[in-house]
Amino acid sequence: MAEVKVPVVRNILQANERLAAANRKRFDDAGIFVFNLMSSPGAGKTSLLERTVEGLADRVKMAVIEGDLQCSFDAERIQKKGVQAVQINTEGGCHLDGNMIQIALESLDLNELELLIIENVGNLVCPAEFNLGEHEKVMMLSVTEGDDKPSKYPLMFQLSSLLLINKVDLLPYIDCDVEKIRQRARQINAKQEIYEISCRTGEGLPAWFSWLEQKVRETKQTRQQN
Amino acid sequence: MHELAIAESLMAIVAEEGRRHDLQKVTIIRLQIGSMAGVIPEALTFSFQMVSQNTIASGAVLEIETVPVVAECTECGQRFQVVDQVFVCARCGKSEIKLASGRELSLVNLEGETRDGDG
Image 1 (cartoon, rainbow over the protein chains, first blue to last red):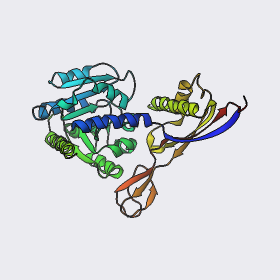
Image 2 (cartoon, one colour; image 1 turned 90 degrees about the vertical axis):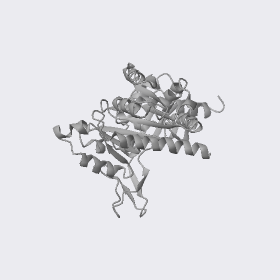
Image 3 (cartoon, each protein chain N blue to C red; image 1 turned 180 degrees about the vertical axis):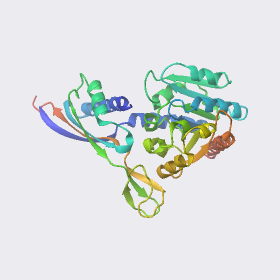
Image 4 (cartoon, chains in turn red, green; image 1 turned 90 degrees about the horizontal axis):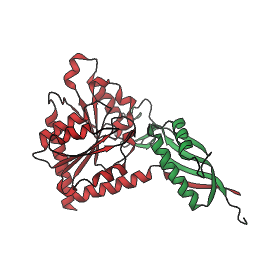
């Protein structure tokens, strides 16, 4: 036996990064805008998707990939609205990864789409670490979760280009200071855009729809230029 | 919570490097993990013990160096360690920054045993 020291220097998640890059190429080749929607459980991701389908499905061709620990309730909720939804059950896994998305893409015809929404597993930690090939990370925080969350889960705030603060219709009844959320989020990620919304009342949703439509247009233009 | 997935990816890389360098056994695995990666070293060590059973890395020690979060101001170039998740330049007060470190999830080197040259 001979003892050896081997310098390696490799990113531990490089296998996932490679799969994410391959997914991204497929999205770009098809000219579709893809975002990765992340939040804690119960923040309102599926409600947002239902509202988004209602608001945009007649103008934007979209599909949804639903990540969940178990069950397919969420995909069924979306399918009822008339949009194609693929369910990924992670069987206890706390996040989606590039490989799961690659498999889910087999069920979708990307050339028929303009927008693909990936709803990640409800969790403010792990999903941030795993790229899926998306163009943007969008995160959602509901006001009932408290205004200290940006400081507790900085990575997700740092990586998300848009923060949706949901359930603002509940603000009169709870102790949550939206200005504090904004201030803390700004300290972590000054470039992050912030929209206050309520999926229940529809408040703030038009701004979200415009953001999405703008992204869909830009992605299509980029493809045509290349 | 994602330590198991990270341990599985790490095991795949260690096995690949083991084959490449003809290692019979891996004894030490050195990692750099950024503070922002949300990885708990104990959980990663525990997960790795599980996934490395009956492999060349069974019983290997994980030496984990935690890398602090350091940001660089894109306005004035100041480098500063981020405290309490405030990514604002300590010198000029701007928050146009880029991360210099803190997100590492890197394997740095391995120590192990090869078959003896004559053997």
